[in-house]
Length: 290
Image (cartoon, rainbow, N blue to C red; front, side, top):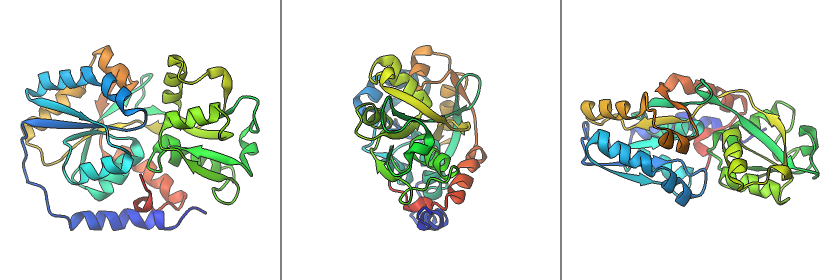
């Protein structure tokens, strides 16, 4: 079984967050800091998101700074202590952040192929030690960041549902980012791993990962897509402009950076499925590093 401390942490973190000094009740900053999830190379993320920065400066009528933190944990803490105003979280990292900063408000979700969901994928090295999911037993399996949805929580649940438990049936290896997992599997450093299907497709289309050197051995059920989140204590007019900047956005250059067709409205309840998955896995979310 996974570490029991992971589940108890969710309530503990929520209680702890309530004891933190409250941020100013209404904020209308002249500079908006937007954090982007560090699931790939930071320089690439910033470069790809430059059209978003320009768009936001125009709609919000103020300066915008793009931020890519060193890892998921740093991004969660930046949101918790009000060091960013908007964040593009992964689903699980949002749930973790919300448990520590209850005032956070998810307001938009990416739409792919007409749906606000995506999938995790399990991959193995072509011609390697793993040809099917059952072959993972007794071997290493690569995850990304511990707070990643499609590169940790979902593939871990996928394996657990097939009676493959980390530490008992296979050795879990955390490599930090989705692209690191894909490259490690491609190069035979680990026989198999899990990551976002959308990110894998992007990596292979760009030639960053050689599609001929990997095989897909499992696909998860649909996962609620990445939410766009803002601080709940921002001025109402600013919050309305932030929503306007994303909902109904049609600029293909901006949407390409997020690997989505557009953004639709969302709320916190959409992510209860991840909380439920963590409970089934007996994961204490507040003990998840990352």
